[in-house]
Image (cartoon, rainbow, N blue to C red):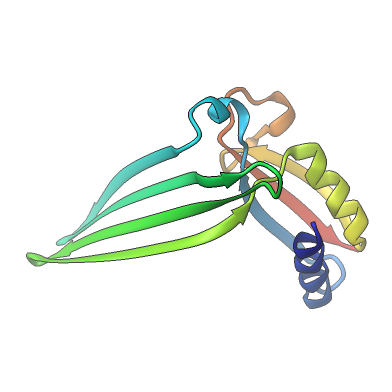
Length: 139
């Protein structure tokens, strides 16, 4: 919690009043029964193909609510293949918990939260949301 509060306070210190902060968080939901979640997708443009794999909830610690997230990019361009892997720790935050942490950090107005990168789907009305997109305004 202290790291999350420090992060929000640092963002606040670097935003002008009225500035907007938008970020995403995984919504754990029913994925606790099968903790390692994985998604993959491929995009092609011109002679470049990028296959992305995203895994989360690996090495999950239920007390600290911290887990590993891994992003792997397999890039093929003109017959040459490169692989880039990023691994980082992330803190799982439930929606009401996030609201409380934002309030404790101070200096933000809660604008809203949305489901899966769609402004047409407020989180409160969305079903089976994977991502919580939070919008805060610096006061």
